[in-house]
Length: 149
Image 1 (tube, rainbow, N blue to C red):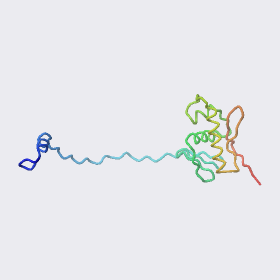
Image 2 (image 1 turned 180 degrees about the vertical axis):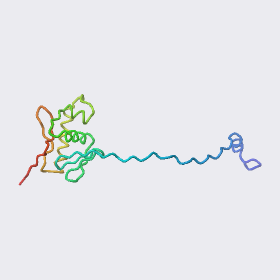
Image 3 (image 1 turned 45 degrees about the vertical axis):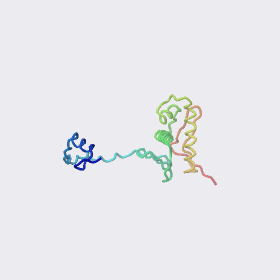
Image 4 (image 1 turned 60 degrees about the horizontal axis):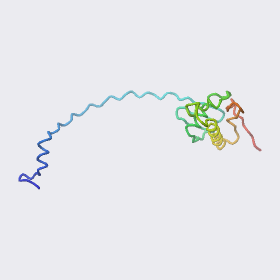
């Protein structure tokens, strides 16, 4: 209900209790930190396979593979140590960050199986990952090219 001066009781009480807020002074622009150039990313090559570690991207014959994080980490571990057998424990550390996971051997086996499947879809004639029974897996220094007639 308006009073004689056209204001409601609520508006009168509010105008008396709240002091007017001073206008904020404009802030000078904050200096921006210098833009650092992006460091050169490490690139690992194995035959037709190229791993860009900075972008977490894998390419086979120029085509990008869509790899989940764990599979990329396993592939990077194998490619960074070409010719050196990688045990299940090392691959667990590379992919999952721990070597003590219940069912860890099966997790590595299934991830390598999926990784091989993705690699073979991109490049049918190349074997990038070999199994070493009782040891683990290895990526040959020169990936083995298979020719089919």
